[in-house]
Length: 310
Image: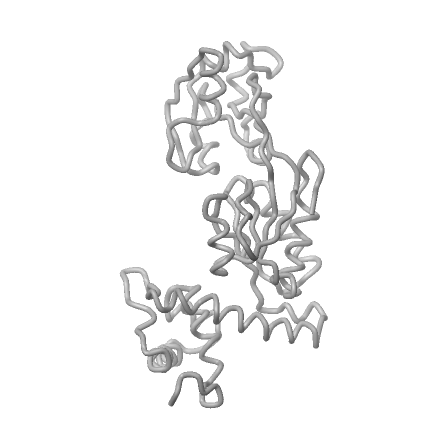
């Protein structure tokens, strides 16, 4: 049978391929699709014949996609999204979102600040629609959107690739987080530059050992003592509580963490440059009503200083 003979292909196999790819295992794909695991395994055998490739190989944690599967994924997802769009046109009632999921790429500082408000907004305005948060950042966000690993993204730029659209959500800046109990000797919750430099510092970084604070201090002939670094903003309450250390992080993350913990947000005594905060998507993605609803939720929940621009 020629693979291009669509009349002979069970198109339900495409849904199973997508679920296997995104869930990383036959048992999880079966739960997602409300099928038995044996039925999913049988479908995988048919998919392997159809595409003349193993598609997924067993690992210690499930199934890993082959190079052919990664090549097929955006094509299959786009085809399924077109079908979903047609159903949304035919039945734009919120019930049409039941079982749908939209993937939003963002770093964990944005997830801390915006995750819960976005979930609540979507639950009110698009019941049945599920939001999936996936980690991304400006250096990889274009590729993640192009390969349809994510549908929307919030990042500090990185949306210049062909086929992507973006809009400004405002400007980001920085603030400091400290244990409130460490502040009395510095008066009214303020940090002088001298006190700031004297403290130990926790650096949040994806891999580097020098941050924007180090650059600003170096310009003044100063240097800080970084006592530890972490890749996760969510670790800061555990690393700062009960210590005299300080972390200088994006203000939106500092505000969210301070609101839920005993940590105190204080102004940074250094002048640090701001940075753009942008929302990006594939140019054709908003034809999907589910993606459009989640973009609306982000617009409603993202409150950053500075003008917004399309």
